Length: 399
Image (cartoon, rainbow, N blue to C red; front, side, top):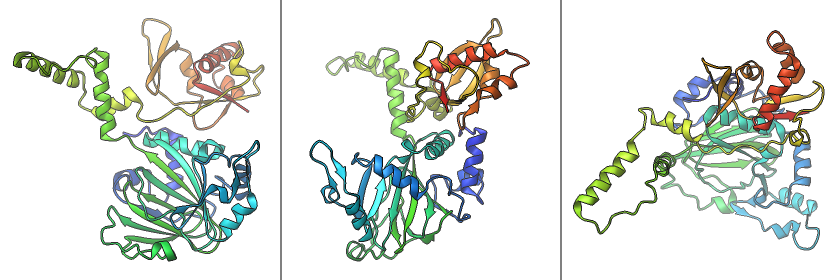
């Protein structure tokens, strides 16, 4: 079922090794936890302490992103930030003092601010077909930040630096004694997994599994990738939304009508709900709605707002904003239909040669595209086709 673009599958394989992607999908995904040891440098290129310092210096103000917590309680922002006046500022010294005393620092949706993590989140979105968000958590003392809890999405833990103790308790904590957790950060007994993650290790936690993480008195940093799957209710709401297409959604329910009219109405409603549904309802839902993914913003300024849409020359790179899922050629004419997620576009048939040289996972040099299709298209034609993609916001211009 998953959209297995080559780049997404290969990158996911490197993260899950030694477990294969197919083994993970068949035996673990949405079923049970998975712990994988990895080389210490496996995630080294994703995020460094230097980059974290820079992000915190420039993006601290949004309280929905930045927080300090200790033993299950968020610290009051006024204890480390001056939020009033013309120039609100964070007090770095107070932040560090809190961390030194045992607070955990968390920063939500860091994939929106750091390019390697943006690409990583997109890899998960392409493969698992679910919206993905990445948070970071950093701690220094042997005190937990978040309390024993469970999440409503699939969770991947990527350990970047230092050791951290992870405990998983399954789908229920009935009978688990948590009385000493708040005062001492002593994990309760009864964990089904009690494991210290080291740099390069990965832990997958399925939705609804209670878990707890405790630092070990030295600097520790990990990424949490949350993948939000559509629920059955989402699919059911999509089915109901189809009623708008046939104009029945706003019809009055005949509460006071006679039995014959109520029966006619009921039969019409049942027929409208199921009419046009395919045997593979899941695939039909995906094709029609593109699940719960929201497009990530991408700007190709200044060029995207100019009449020419592209920079001069060939010394620039481009990247598909979304994967092209399929191409259907028009046997009667010179056009082809291109499926980008849930939308269909009609372009000149020659666009397929350009699109097959592009990638949604990494930028591609325009000069390379021109050389690759030189036997079929000249440079001016390639530029015209690329400009069409930019205009439809399917292609981004990068450095």
